[in-house]
Length: 225
Image (cartoon, rainbow, N blue to C red):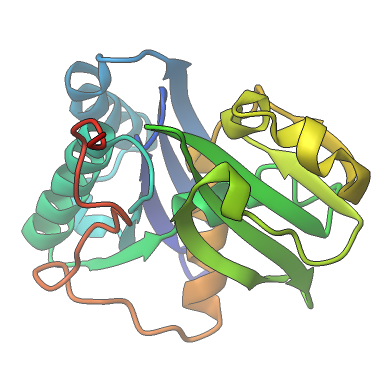
């Protein structure tokens, strides 16, 4: 019997820190909401999951990482770890949008999802994703945007992410929504599913040495004036 596809997924782009090891249909997970603790939790969890499965990193087929947007520090921690693991094990690295991962967390119940994260500084990280043939398609490309510039195409969207509670999002756009979940955070479980689907579809992962995080915004300082 052929062994199942083995994917290690790291999600650290928000307050949540999660690691998932997917071996074909079986998935093992470690996750918690732990701001400022990602660096201390991530690699020990990786070691635990690999040990539980009785495999080494070199037996993986891919490492997946949520590459942003989100917390600059969280993205750097997760991306650096994923890049190092993929390079050291000589396996491919699959980078996936944090907003698409957020959409996938509710994708079983909703086909039109607005992932919205509070980007601070009076802005959102925002995208619009529609599921067609079990694949997410961006209707609005991931962006960093001010509240008064945000426009939602059409109706029937489910909004998800802590941005839903920021800057009057629901007050401004509630008539276009079927519902909202401001408490949901992206998970490594959803990331692993997306990575497997991408590999199964024959997507071309970027070599670990060439992959880059996607911040969308290159500053963290307060906006002038």
